[in-house]
Amino acid sequence: MTKFEIGDTAPDFTLSSTDGGDFNLYGELENGPVLVNFYVGDFGLNCYNYSVRFVERYGELLDAGTRMVGVNSDSADSHRKWKERLEAPYDFLFDENKKVSTEYGAIVGPGHMVTGFTNREFYLIGGDRRIRYIWRADVPKTLPDFDEVLEGVKKGLALQF
Image 1: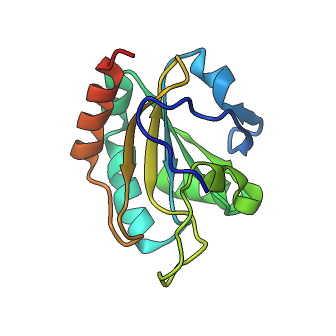
Image 2: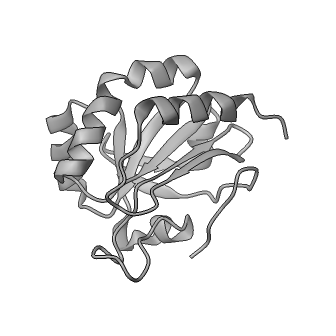
């Protein structure tokens, strides 16, 4: 399990998407930065509570210059239902066997009640394939604040490497 830092090159990945096709990170980066949102699970109360805020204010992320995708190991069918329930304008990616979540270090470690689950983490990846912003929950119950993430995204997009 790797923990990446700001400025590191993000590893490429391809995952099935709720849009019915495959999402390839490096291919998508040709259209601009992507905010990758690793999260615990579909239909959980905490995930729902913060996801609703991100859906309601998604336009602000677009205005800042980035798009977002959600990632965890729940099934493609679960992701489609989750997207529909949230009325989310962005896609969710099926991380079978938690391969991508593990590669990004977004798996809850030993000592927590949800050891082995995907943690709440955000990685802003620029068109140059570098990680420009990271938000990680200290413990899986910690919820992201939209304003904090948006401010981090704006600062990350302004970084020069």
